[in-house]
Structures are given as structure tokens and as C-alpha cells.
Image (cartoon, rainbow, N blue to C red; front, side):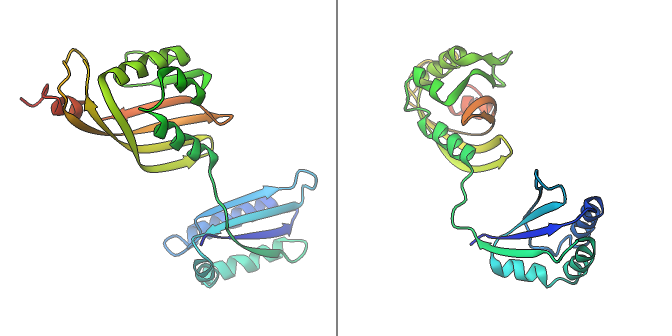
Length: 230
């Protein structure tokens, strides 16, 4: 179970504390078990800071605390504080990255929804970057036309293999599974079952996708359709 520790402290010497944290990161390289560290400053009290440190589990947090480098840095941290920091230990019982859920819903809907339904997942000023198009596709109307072409040529679904998120961005690694049922790039329907792997980087605004960048093995798809490699 993911474990989070909140360290609540007061200091007027944050620049020094910040440099101290940089030293801890450098000195514990290859040893530390912490996976994420955030420090927030109270907007109503400039001397009040809360550090949020994430670990894979409570046991890993204890291993991290027992490192001699962590103990040394902690003693130096106390010296920079106006009073002894307080600690709150939390087992994480819910952890949802909402943009990841939105990206997953988008890929799960692909291949099922009608072309006009794709706009429910996109902002009005959506921009789509696809290596098979000379220019980015602008707006929902352009994407609906693009999507309708794929739907006419293939029955398909997306299998999500992996996802990573940072700030307002989500990257999804996927496998596309399809049957060639209609003309595609001048290739008549073959009835062939095909797969294709790729990744899509997406940026979100207000829970909807405002930009996508696609990378996928188009050459591999054409080879499966008998166009390449003959």
C-alpha cells in the first residue's frame, strides 16, 4: 500500500532548506526508497511549509528513514526550523489521476462511438498531430472526418498497455486490434485481422483532451495488409 508522510514545519530560511533537500537527493541516490517529494508554502503564512513525501509502502519509508544520509539531513533540517517539525503518517486509500481515467475512457470508446460522439472527449479548439497527415488536424470537425475514415476501413478496439501522467499530460501506450473491412489508402477490404502498436501523448484542459500527438507502426500495418514486404 502506498504510504505518504507529511512533514509540517516553520522556517524563514527556506532557500537553505531547499539546498539541503537537493543534497539529500544527491547523497541518497541509489539508496532512497522515496518516489515523490513535494513542498508547499502556505499562501497565508510565508514561513509555514508542508513537505509531502511518497513511498511504495510504510516498510520502504522506514528503510529510507534508517539511511544515515536521511538522519544527517534531518538533523540539519531541524536546525533550520523555528520549531520542531511535526509528522503525519498516511496509508493512501484512494489515488486517482483523473486525466488518466479520462484518457482511458477515450481509448475504450474508440471503435464503438459514432464519429459525432468523439467531440464529447475533446475541447472545441482541439489539435491532432498525426504523422500520416502533412498538417495538424484542427478542431472537432476535422477529427470526426479522420475518425470516420478509420471506422469505415476497420472494425477496431484499443487495448491499453501502459499509461503515465505528469501535470496536465497523459501518455498512453496501446495495442490496436482490428479487422480490415473497407478501403484503406486504396487497398480494398481484405478481411485480414491486424494489430498495431503505438503511443499517444495527450494534453488535457477541464477534463477534456485539447491536444494529441500520435506515434504508431503504420509500416507494420501495411505489411500485414500485404502492401509492404512482398
